[in-house]
Amino acid sequence: MEGEGAATKKIARIGATERDESSGPISSLCSILLLCISVILIICLMPFSLFFIIKVIPEYQRAVIFRLGRLKSGDASGPGMFVVIPCTDNYTPVDLRTRQFDVTPQEVLTKDSVAITVDAVVYFKVQDPLLAINNVSNFEWATRLLAKTTLRNVLGGHSLAEVLSEKEAIVNAMRAILDEATDMWGVKVERVEVKDVKIPQELQRAMAAEAEASRESKAKVIAAQGELNASRALREAATAIAKSPTALQLRYLQTLNFIGAEKGTSVLFPIPMDIMTGMGTHYFNTGGQGQDILPPPS
Image (cartoon, rainbow, N blue to C red; front, side, top):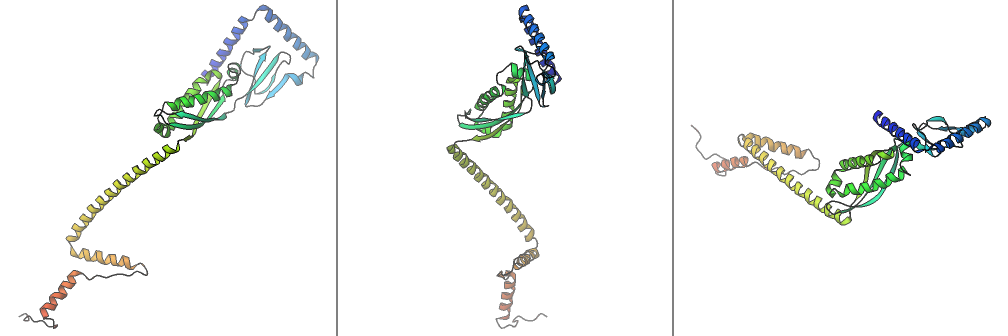
């Protein structure tokens, strides 16, 4: 900030020196004569002239004073109270607060030949009141026009995918370009934001179909990976259960307990095959009579 202020003062001093050198002796004599007459009138009309020579501006404004049509040397006056000479001076107040404006929707052709509509918002403020008044006729309107052309130029050098995915880099590039271009006008561009990017309906449907197909393919890959992991887990479980037949019975009873916890649930209770095998062996050994036909053990 100190460097910028020094540069501004240097520009003002150079301008004042050029004006003094360009003005001839007759012009200087007339200026001095008019100033003397104005001062005499102010003194003669005291205290009524105080209402015309004393001006007050708020904290957020500065006054750029022109004396006899020439920019008064030095910095802008204000804030607070300052004095002007009614017959020779006129001043223009400049607001230093941050302003904003909407960039009207712009038709932009991207790098990959896609027509889109983009609108943005720009935040700026006056950094040097002297340059803002003396170097450009209407700094706000000039900044608006420059923002429109910059938006089209920057977006035209990017593809649609980059516009949608790299908004932060794009708005930073736009802000840097605007800030550099408006520096000679005493304007500081603080922020640029892209509000909306409108894409043609046909392209939206194509992008939606492409995104849906991509999601479906990813879902199938995830499902297949899940089946693979499940099959590996089942294989490991089967290997562990095969080493201990009792574990299979415990798992079977645990499953029945889980199913029976729900109310109003019908449970089909299958009989284990080893029980049926034992009963069939006993039936055939007894000859179907319930008695053991084999000789008793000795």
